[in-house]
Image 1 (tube, rainbow, N blue to C red):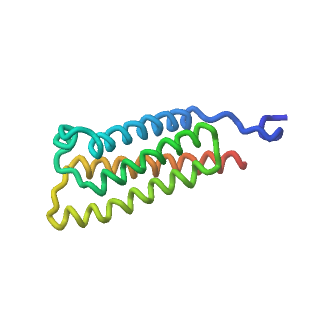
Image 2: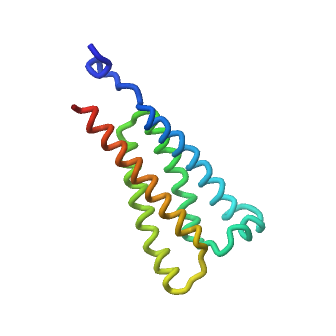
Length: 139
């Protein structure tokens, strides 16, 4: 008998362990950086440059979901897969009003564009990895 036949989950793969840790660190860093811009001293806002406030608020809220998803991945919870996909999708949708803001000539930092692309790509990759892990577990 193997672990799966006894109702236990197989051990979390090394790749998903690493992804979980990176997601956790990413979430904590997101909470810290967005939180310092929103709630920190004015020097934090000055260092952020021409930040777009609604994007910073979105990132701050998303940081909590990054941490939750990281924990779900580590604990192999079924909800971690749709949550990761939801994070990727909502971040992609956040890019739409940001793009309108930038096209309309609103001030922004180029690093915001890079950060949005990184976040969308990271969470899309996590979602794909979880999909394949789930698919392979059912074979």
